[in-house]
Length: 279
Image 1 (tube, helix red, strand yellow):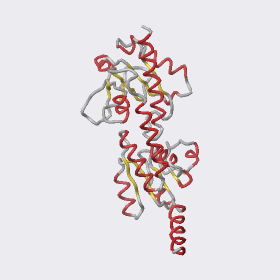
Image 2: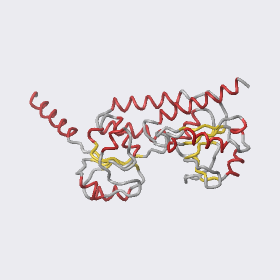
Image 3: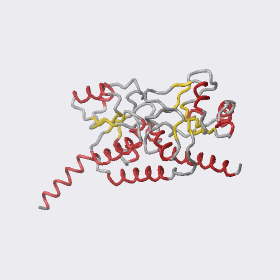
Image 4: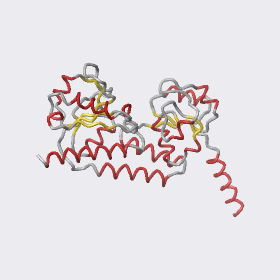
């Protein structure tokens, strides 16, 4: 019996000690590292720069330029991706490479991905901790302010003449807004990336505008200029000085770091509430 247990122990050590993981999306890469598997990652993609160890790893391409040859070069035991590059994953499967594919559009998707990865790599406790942190952050948003129309703008530009990208109704940002008992100022049944113009924004008349500006994280002056531009619009958010910028690099990455975004969102809601109380 002892001999059998020893053999099983050696098998487990060999199985998980020889993992060679390649991640094909920044969000998946962050989740793998957060589960304590960073030392098993042998390659990732160009924009996988968190945590800092990720920057030093070999790259197999970018969002639309993944190299099958580079992946095979690293002899991975598993390739982990999001669910949008099915053709590449099918090619890898045909070549005998194990792949895992996940959705990360909604909060439930992110939590299910964490749970599934935790189960696959025998990291259930670490996965549970990450999920508990997400649930706690979501619960903390409730009831700070209510029934406000929130508009989240993706990569805002230095003028309002061009196309304006906003978050739609089928992403985790919507989950945050709903959990806070507010609503997305933008509404559409389409799952396509929403693109609007100034006239559309004026018609929506959002009460709160949040600009996602990770590209300006080191430039406070330009962030201030950008907010000033939006404050010229004849909308409630401008009238009540409720235009904000979130410049953390985690803004827009559907990983465990959504808890940091929710911390920022909570502070914004608290600021809006405090302004109401002092009117």
